[in-house]
Image (cartoon, rainbow, N blue to C red; front, side, top):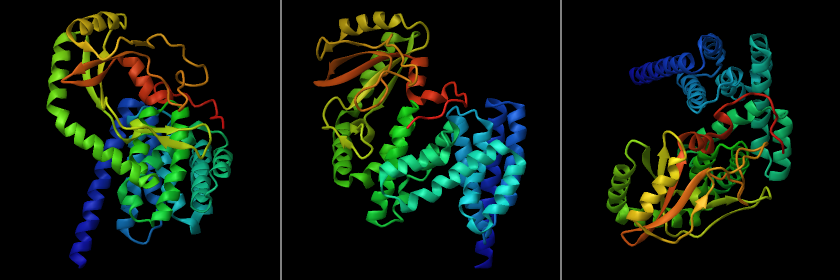
Length: 377
């Protein structure tokens, strides 16, 4: 038993060390030397603050915090204070008996990091006991004091804790309540234009929020997708030949999030009917977006159109306070040229989009993040 525990401890130490090396590398490459120095100091301080009873538990918490920081940087989050707070957040949350001492050390390290860390700690204390989403939403805004960085870190933290390995440890009622709480962070992510993150959370929590509906959607997509997969790959190759040198081609398969919509009320959400098309072929322009119409002309010549409707959002006006024109479901509209074709008897969405517009649609505020304006309720 002693040898086995020692082996686990060594394995955890190696994993933690490798992840820290990855964090430092990303920090240097994507944030610069000054940010790296700050994050290095925060990492050293965070690993020294852990008060858990076993080395294995300590390593697990450290790995989660480092993973969170890595995920934030990979997604374009460039606020060094927020990344440092991500490294500290689990330590404070899991050591209630030492909160004052831990807070004092973080405050001495950096006051801004302390403020974000305090917001994350205050949010954590709200979630387990409050099932009134309207009240919880107000309390979350009060806890963050409108700090957008705190919201972003928490959104990614919710995503990290939305996997089955976390939800399956709860009772059905508790899992449902936590899934309901997560819908608030889906809403925050959409408000910040972070569509990709919002969809990722939906895909994780929908089986607990709407189990029967999620199972039906998943089974339908799997059945239809397996039958159509070879035809879809052939279409993608054909389109790539058509646009070679001008654009890339990517297959975007529908997921649970494709049929999930958030309403204007905090407690309102629903799913739409599952039907064809079950995927979108994205033609991603690398250069001038004016070539979109040229590509569309070629597609019209070579494929049968499902209808003659063309949706032109290439030059849609961006709302000054949001990250795109909004559907009633709150999601941003992709600035793209869209139509549908018939392939092997099935309708397929074609979306022609510039790479920069696609990045903005997926990542929103993270594309050029500046920590300034608070997130409004």
